[in-house]
Length: 585
Image (cartoon, rainbow, N blue to C red; front, side, top):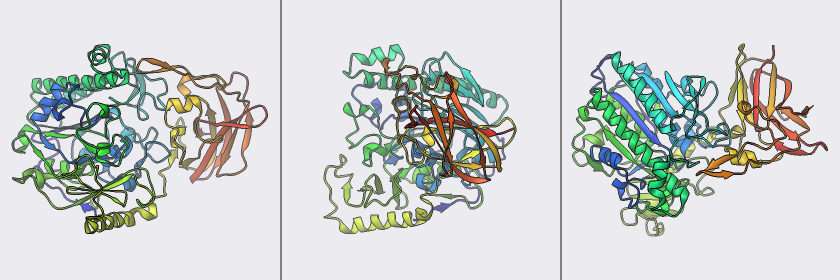
């Protein structure tokens, strides 16, 4: 597999000057854990989404469009046009969720071409410098950290009284979070429109992802239709999205922006809850290598874009195609030598029969070993799906992927395996590399570390933190110090903003309105900290202490840190789930 390279401005709009109002505004709406079947336009018999259905009817729709089976890899692939194992944001937890710094991002490309850029909602590609959205090309950001409101860093956050970041300032909202993101986006887009400035808006929602606390009116609407209360909340969260899409559409019309705004609506992976009601005939759900895990929604509407009538296009395509496609449609110059695993889909849109070049696509996340040992990967080639290295399905004849036809199509299997091997050969040397957390040395700066960044340890949500997860010594943080010197490291059991005693149980939380356990109280008497695997330094935890401080020497460049807690007997009892590192005075 050879990545397509775009190194010059392309597309009919390529001669427009930055700030030229002929350039379209661009809005991407990305939902979190909504599946392809989680809307009425796709046949769901329970869920009602009239406004998404209207957008469906007004759009060019890709019906064989694929993302990653989980959220971080999809977001990195969207932002870079590269497969997740190439751009390095390949997993949700385990220290492998940061994009390479040398890869240009979608907002950086838009900004370099004269667009204002804004993110509203979920980023999930880094919470600390230089991986925050403001570091990766977004000028305006109203966002939350982690993967959502039950992640380890957003331990006590809430859909209704949302704690969020306005740039880097912590604020609180009494609006439902989905309303908040749309309100903030429309306010900012209005300012850009008033200034005659084209904008790129990324409305990355954290719904309908758990913890499933929908608005009462939406929950009540579905509570009588489905037996599972969490599913009723899940559908209720989608209903809120549907209403906000209508609000946005009305606003665009009122501001005279609708005709020349390119609006893309998509989801990030297979359904998290809706498969028991309707899964569009697919096998699998979120996390699965089968189509139910990664076949996704793609609605593209641009009234002034001369895309032809609204219609379905059944062409195998991938989230990595979005950046090169937008560059082509809008006429964006991309950095010299930028490489994409995706292809522009403009020839497909312009084709009378919706066909395009023959191609093969890789769907894989997380795993860093070949598919003969790791089955959670798929290769897509027209109607064919190769899952792992031994399961072949013909989607046209068998959309539910029930019949493995590998034995009857050995040449197809060989060709698809060979494609995967070519892809693997390009990333094999770098696949074990981890993007480090940068430790800054400037005055007043610090870096927060959490258990989500423990390399090879899955400890990314409040339930796991509350109950304790991972080995007794926790995991290892990969860090990169910008300057050699002495650094202060404070380790904690609970997030810093909680200011909670190390030994106490965590605060209670709810899922679907039901109280869950506040977690374990630990008899912490000391903490240990190891740098680069050396014998640890041990420090006593004072009575009522919220954290345990250390002072260590770091060399410039990469190091590892590992911190954990001990009881009175010196027994290791849990990792330190949170730490803050800053230069010593």
